[in-house]
Image 1 (tube, one colour):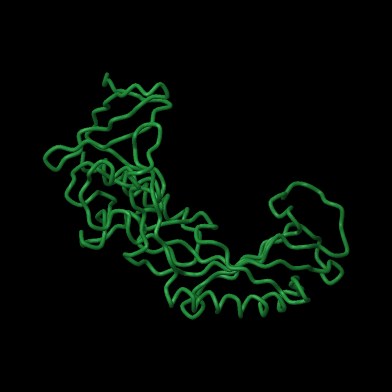
Image 2 (cartoon, one colour; image 1 turned 90 degrees about the horizontal axis):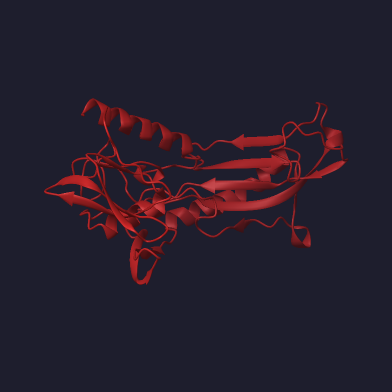
Length: 277
């Protein structure tokens, strides 16, 4: 029977490599006691922001590590819909307008009110329902200058530097944002939704970058080590046995939620590891 080490409630502080191979991970428990866990394979699945933090702090080489940070631009507004105009039995409202090549964004309309996720809860019918939001999620370019980096001046309780984030929308990104702002009122009108806002005009607000919690790209996969962190199976270029899984490996996410894509890629990475054991 094989033996193994198991660290519970431990914080990974450093990935250890020797001669181009991963050999294990240094971890600390809540009492700040340090341990070394030996491993032939290490999978870093610690989010788009934390994965490059651990890789950079561990001295893992790679020009692209932490770079090419991307997410979605996120434009929101709110509205009202009259129930008298709807002949069907009312339930929760969830309308998705998918992205296309000519429309590089998707729109989600959800309601009624804050109850769009209560599929099994009865609510008293109202003549007019406010919608939770009408949101447009735009495609964002993957650019080298958008990045996560270490901030040595700030460290956590385990001595690992915190991260800084440098991000800005490109000219192309802003053009898509303006397209979203122009099209949402037309989509709402077609759906019988009255957008609400100040002075009788809809408020179409661009939320701060990261508001949709779907960051990606900081350990992107690809064939060129100069522009990617891992190969097509999630293995770090030049380091045998070291892998990354999650949104961070996705080189582009378009306008859709990337969760299922990231899960599929993680399964693909595990299959690759098993086949090469």
